[in-house]
Image (cartoon, rainbow, N blue to C red):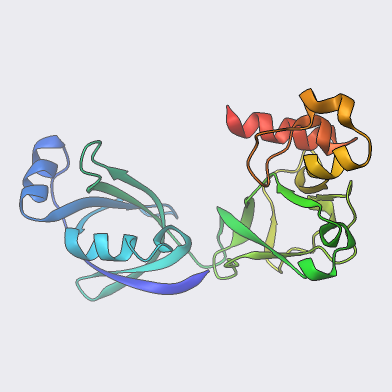
Length: 232
């Protein structure tokens, strides 16, 4: 995870739309802390400070320590509701982190050693199916990112979740299949140079770098299905 953030807060006694609107007029944002064995805690935070922390780009992937009148509560942001017109935050949900507990989070993937991939050196394209992994992690062992080594990968190879050694305290939230994370495919120009002129309708012409038609993914039908599912 990214470094912990600290967010001062005050308790709020009333819920409801009227009370929330009054808080927003005062430059505050209503929020709630839930989870663990405790009852939900209603709070409000300063809008300017919340916007500043949202602007760091890693707020949703950070542990946020709520300072509630001197009491420190470790949380993980779960949802930020934004105004449909001006994008100002209107409400925040925080998940309370408890000792020994686990939480499901989305962790970004980072590909390393691309220079050591023969397929990429030949002009192949790394087609990323999943930019994040859904993991179940122990509260105090949430990784900031998952590194995936592409050393030795050739065109036509795929990377599945079963290939990864996840950090201690983390496991995949998806357990019913060995899903695809990325495939190494040949770009349209490379296929044409190898005599695939007759397949112009299926080679993905006009697609952006990193995008491929399903036929370019070779035998890995799972990767095509993953992309179709994510586009729905």
